[in-house]
Length: 198
Image (cartoon, rainbow, N blue to C red; front, side, top):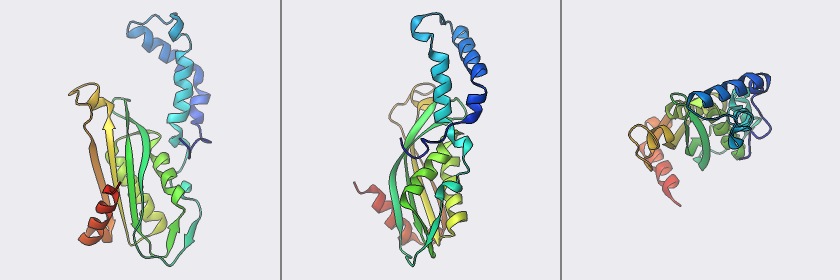
């Protein structure tokens, strides 16, 4: 996945030895043989994975929007189907899905790829889907000061699919609505209609 590939969680690098030790201890505590061939490198692999999947801690999500541009465009802008991967802060289990972002500019726009980078910056940390949705909307509102922002996030949560109620295939959908989208039903309907189109 591109976007934050240049970022790594430097805390993991600084604490690699301890992380590997604790992963080894967890493996022992669940009944595994840490000397088994398939597990010899697992603690190191987990630490390397943490550098990547928790890269969001190294970034201020506002900064990934980069330079914004003056543009006299006051119609709906949508970037949809932004794939994300995150980790549930309750179980440290993966969840993933798609984010759809829409906004109506009021004189400033961001590069379209920057919206995908914003999603990555927010999701690559321990999270809950509701917070992801609100953070994306709030950051766009703060930085671009648009007339309105609407964000819809879909997610499939392993903590719900693989454990607990064990309902694979179930999806959680969250939304955040700011500015004109709160009162303009037609604008909301246009956004929802456009993100449903294949």
